[in-house]
Length: 300
Image (tube, rainbow, N blue to C red; front, side, top):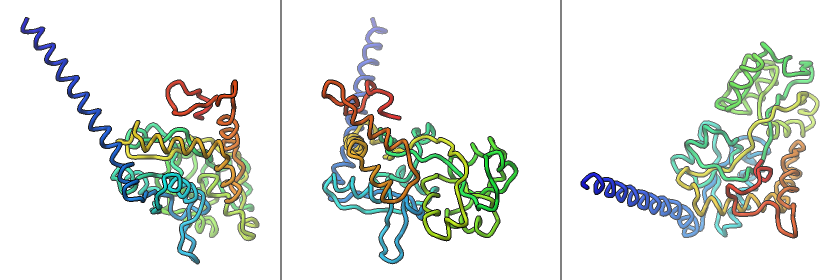
C-alpha cells in the first residue's frame, strides 16, 4: 500500500511540475511580445556589411538592404518602431541567445545545431545556396578546378568545412566580406566562397562586372530561417512572425525585394509564392497555423 501511495505521490508531483513548467514557459513567451507591444519597439538583428543583404549607406547613415526591408515590414505589421542591430557572423547567434535582440533576420540557414540553441520560425523565408565569385582570368569552370587552390571565405560560416572536405580547397577564413573581396582583387585568393545572393551585387557595378563572375553551379544549402530565443518556442511571437512570413510568400513580398535588390534569380521564392497560393475547393492548400499536418511542400 505504501508503495502505491508513493507512486501516486510521485505521479502527482510530476504532473504539478509539468504544469508549473508550462505556465512558466507561457509567461516567458508572453513577456517578449508583451514587452515589444508595450514599448512600441522591436529590436531586430541583421547582417553587417553584407552588400544588398544588409549594408550601412554611408551617405545617409541608414542600414539598407533585403533584411532591413523585411525587418521594417515585420515592425509595421506589429505597429511598432524598429531598431536595427548590425551583426557579424560571429555575433548573430549570441545576440539572440543572450536576448540582445528580439529577432534575428540575418541569412541564417536552418541547421540541427542551431535548433539546439535557438528557435527557427517556419516557414523558411529564403534560400540562396553557396557559390564562388572568381576573377575572369582564373579560368575556373568547375568545383574540382578549386582543388588545392586558395579560396577566401568569411570566418565562422557553417559550409566552410563542408566545401573544404568535399573539394580539398585551401580555405582562407577572413573576418569580413569586404576583406575577402580585397583579397580576391589583389590575387591572394582565386575566389570567394559565400552565399550567392551576397556575391551577386558585386557584379552590378561596371568594374565588378568586368573583373569578376560566378561561373559555377551553386551548391544547395539549407533554407534561411528567422530565429528567436529558444524560449519563444510555441509562443505568440513565433506564431505572429510565422504568419508574417506566410504573407510575404503569398503576397510576393520576397519576390519584389529580390527585384529591388537585384538578387540572382531564385526558384525558392517563386515556388513558395505558388504553393502558398494554391487552393483546393476554394481553400488554401497550405493552411495556418503551421502544425504537424502541414504538407511538407509548404515548408521546403
